[in-house]
Structure formats: structure tokens, C-alpha cells
Length: 224
Image (cartoon, rainbow, N blue to C red; front, side, top):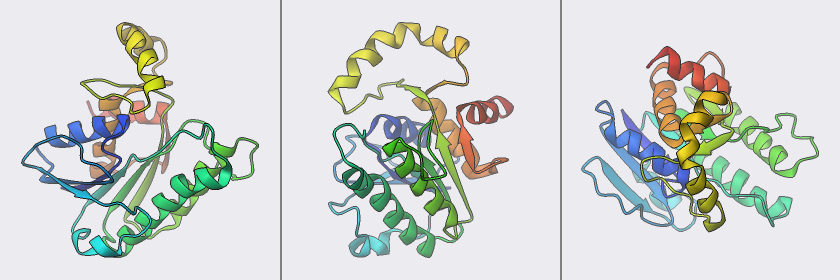
């Protein structure tokens, strides 16, 4: 399987990249982003691309993929709806529209978030924008598209948030991870679990297209 990965320098993307590189069934991983991952592996090729709303200059490199894992995202803190939409909606949908045209047999997996508002009319700004993004992706002519809505995400195996404000809580919570996972299995996931689950749905699909933490956990439990 040939995989395209967006957001590979972010916390979730780092975890997904690790799982892709460890998986013997993955022939190649191509990451797209504004900066390099710093990872060296024979399977990995990186495309550094400044304008993530325009893929025309690199279209020739975007064909022949079986799956796309879209882990690119930012916090809505300090942003108005237009600013947040420019990154969360515009970049995601522009990429997906290009990929759907070039790879009609592709499975597209998008990391959204717990609390996303599919109605697009709720009071919480980020949830509306995420919902609009999910709905747009589900309308595109991919082989399949899945929306992942994890709740609390805990980094493991070297994955770390690019946001300095988040790194201290993650570091303090690390010793309690086994307790959190046992006590709140449908609320807490690790970065490596998200990566394995993405690979699983890319290969086998899932019973539904919008997957909350509990749904993702059930998939992992049924295919250990």
C-alpha cells in the first residue's frame, strides 16, 4: 500500500508516520508539508510545499496512492471563524479535491475531533467548521472516506505537540497513561493507536464513516 500523509510534523501525524514506517504492508509513505519531518527511512519521501491551498505545481507527484491520512490541524484559540476556516476547511478540501480526481481508488482518513458538529449550525465555532469540513469530504468521490473523532490524545514513542503550552501537561500525564486508558477507554487514545486504526480502515474499511473514540477502540479490539 502506498500512503500519502499530511501533517506529519504534528503530534498525531508523528504517531501515524511511525506506524506507517513500521508496517511491513506499507511500500511507501509520501509526506506533504511546509517543513521537513526530520525522519530518515527508505520508505519515506518528503514533499516540501509552501502553498497548501494550491497543488498544481506538484500534481505529477500525487498519483498512485491507496490511502491518504490527513492529520493537519491547528487550535482555534485566538482565531475567528474566517481564519480558522482558511486552514481547517480550505486547505483540507483543496487537497482532498485534488486527490479524489487523481486517485479515485483512494481511501481518505481525516482527523477531526470529538464534539464536531455535523449540522454545521451549532454555537461552537470550531465544531461547526470541522463539521463542514467532514461533510465536504464525505461528498467527494473517493473509494471511501472516514472521519476520526478522537477525544483526549496522548503522545507516545517520541511524538510531541508542536505547541509548547501543551507539552507540559502531556509530560505530567505520561505516568498516568495506563490508568487513563483503563478508566476511560472510550475517551482517551494514544498517537500510535490512531496510526494503527488508520491503517486498519484503509485496508478493511469500517462499519460507518464517522468514527468516535469508542468506534476506533472497537476496531482495534476486533483486529489486535
